[in-house]
Image (cartoon, rainbow, N blue to C red):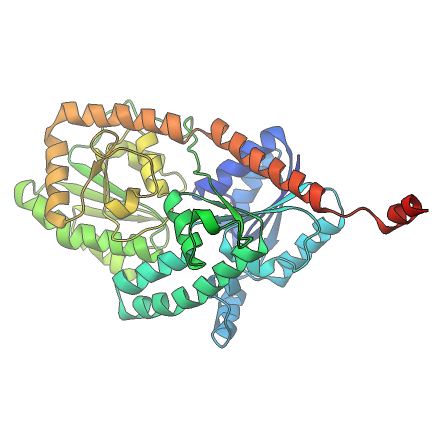
Length: 418
């Protein structure tokens, strides 16, 4: 197949869904990627993929332009997520590629890409919504760590609900990472599975993403004792809430019994509220790291106490694939098919979470069993070969459906009648 893949952010290992789709599709199909980049680090990520032979066009746009668009969008109905990457340069590049007529299907990733998408699309489209973003904002309105975050969550939830509902009516083929997100999107229309087709809404396919199990693989060396790790993009509000919950409510309970336990918080762009946590010498806040694996290799346990989340949490998949047992909140693993108690440990209340950490640090047979089962879960449910097969089946369905609905040319009809 000839696939045009549009993403509003750089394709890098930090974003394992788009990175996995692009790297896997390029092995079997004719793939062209259009992406937005903001700085030299973004472009370096793109050059790495270009050296692998992947055709990527990187459209450079300074972040100040993105923020200005969001400022102007405040007086409109447009969600800020959509305004942020509605770059005219990206729209022009998409139009140019579509005009070439050389593609079978257009793959558009995430809600942020839709602001740059042309109104008229001459070929089948698969929109990878990834998550139900209005649901994420609703949770942010309830659990945001500051009054401003709660205000933004409330405001953007309302706008994004309307926008996502419009996309259910605009596109025929939509992907999401989990059943939880599929049901949340259907709920926007006030319907269930049985009435979706009656209202001519999109076909929403649950398609989880995989993990590069050659890149993220179990560490066979010695791990640093009593070391926990929390990973993720630390500018993201749900991750900030998780880090603060961990340090303010869970670690004090752990330190009462094991004062030597240490925590690594690894992820890009931590705000001051997170950086301040490193004032305690037992806590390390790394900021951006080009390779997460050395930090995962140090840790004994991955801790993920997110108070709210949508979709699939990459931090869970990466830890399991790296041979680290995971303790996670219900929100963090609700998008997974992992079985609590077998593949990972589930804990929600601070006391419960602290008790699970202490148990796992002391119980080596349990540690080994969770590592083994976690690796088996990743191989079964997040294998890129299987996922790519499902993705190409969605592409083929979209292409076949479009061919069946395209009317015959007028000239041909006229000759037939004559």
